[in-house]
Length: 128
Image 1 (cartoon, one colour):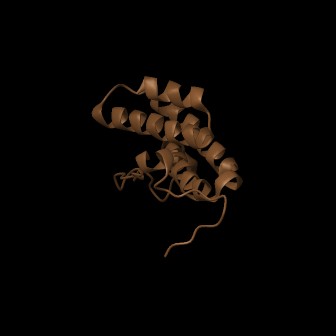
Image 2 (cartoon, rainbow, N blue to C red):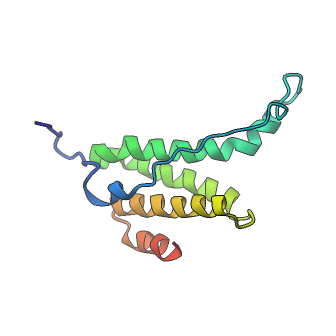
């Protein structure tokens, strides 16, 4: 028999079962960042948004099950998704960018639902 602490949330409750939990992977050609590059941040800057996206998902996974104590992590996930959105929005529309945009909106809607932000949740659902 599973036991939950009082004030914690179950992942099967509410909207969290609707999260899009696909982590992003980076596949780069071997010549992208040669070892002799003086400024290794050149390659990192191009992919930092992937880390932000994955960290946002981790923040949701860690923050959601602990109830109100996890609200700070849930808010952090929204901040990270906003950063990713700023990179994704200007990109030309393609299947992959569209899936990413929809996953961000979906995950933001789930987090807003967890935080009882009904207006923001509805806004994300309408945008989808």
